[in-house]
Length: 128
Image (tube, rainbow, N blue to C red):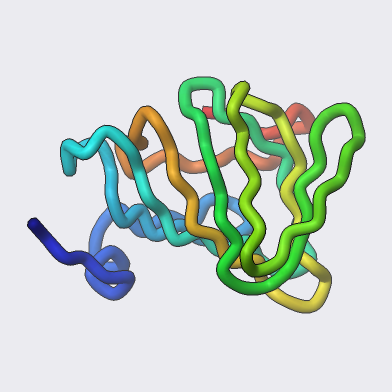
């Protein structure tokens, strides 16, 4: 058993500025659990075009508000208690509300190494 908190992660390479927010990689591949758990903050008023080609992801909203949009134009509101699941390596837009950060607990399978970062400056979105 082990215990890890956000402050511990901030002192390591597991604390990542991913482009439009931050990610505390609380559990990564090196922990040997077979999945990753992250505390993810999406900054207010940001939009990110994302895709995880090598990972499946589920995100549970614990604070703030925002939305996720699939590539067919379906928009889903996110607020505390909502979960969205990218079960087919879905490309998507993730947006935080104009007035508050969106805070998520993100779970990845297979697990992240822990150092991955998005490159949001391309018109095609970011993937890893």
